[in-house]
Image (cartoon, rainbow, N blue to C red; front, side):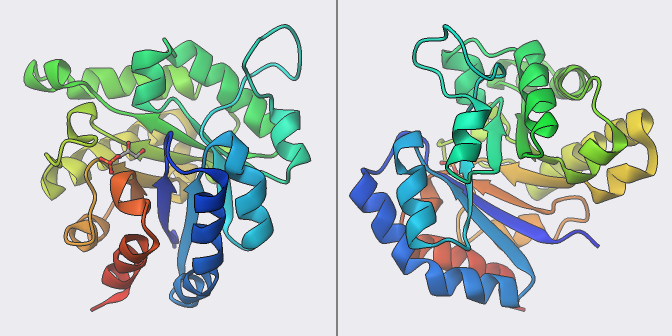
Length: 252
Ligand code: 13P
């Protein structure tokens, strides 16, 4: 049985003080979520990772990116050993904004996934098609490439711990969320791709939907058979809204 997972991606938002304030307010929230068998977490900016962990040590905290090399001449980058040094054991990989604005490719995502697993970390690997690809009916071709190249060389054991987030680029921050049918169809497709490559372990992979998830629509997504949770941007920034997301998932 896969546990539900609600993850907030704060992107380039919040000062350290703002992030710490959220962390303090989310202590009870984390307990409430866990009591209802829902795992929650947030991905703050690098500079706030430490503060959030300190204020709410039980909350799962992810970095939004990492470099695949342990150290070296990569100005401006953050390595996996640096994250581990802070006690951070989760990391987003291949978010569409990284792919679009920072030229991240399926190949670099693959290197990051391999490096994260080599360090016993948990990646949330983001995939999704652009609007042009969606309109040209290329969604499944794009997702297939992202999944096959991204997961190359992973072991079954790695895959059992992997989280994949399906985030159609056209739905991110636009308010134009994908229908629940599309979310289920693509999350199921991703699970089938993983099954073809790695076998039964595909049933253990948690697959999230992301893109304009709000308290009003979160329950509908999580009711889909292959949607195990959500990766949430805008609606995760305020603790009240994050709380509402969790409460709405819990509600019957
Ligand atoms: P929004 O929820 O703001 O659409 O962002 C989704 C996202 O990119 C999460 O990673």
